[in-house]
Image 1: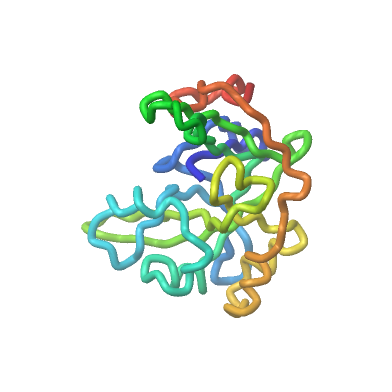
Image 2: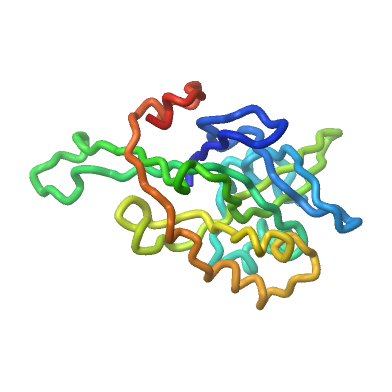
Length: 213
């Protein structure tokens, strides 16, 4: 997943086109067990990294290797978060199935993938706290999994979506690795709608409702 939209959350300005490297809204669980809405940098910076530039390579975390990758496994076990959105964008490459089409003629069609009536949902994420040379950043990655039959014609990956009944269970620090697999296996895409939109969304400087038209 490369960007997403967040239309309406109380006390949060609507965003229609949020690219990686920007600040995004997330819900985390604090040490006292309470939940808090926070702003995180989209692109994880592992606590052991000496350079924050690594974040551009860690915007998404593959569910299949979360417990193996040094960049993700500690955050996955202890620092999970919910990332609210009203939709996300994917691009489908057009023309590759036509043997008469030149590679330079290939185009990409953007799609907005969302709930009916643009209802709010929450993607699974992990977050990290990084400090180096008096600089401090709180950052996150969005967890993705293999696309199901509905999304696969557009893209081979999709974000993991957490069901509302499981929000608290996802955030709690007492969850086990075996229990976590339940969230990744759940299918929350049954009611998702896939809407083709204009290429206006391709420019990250465009952040208005016309991105969804």
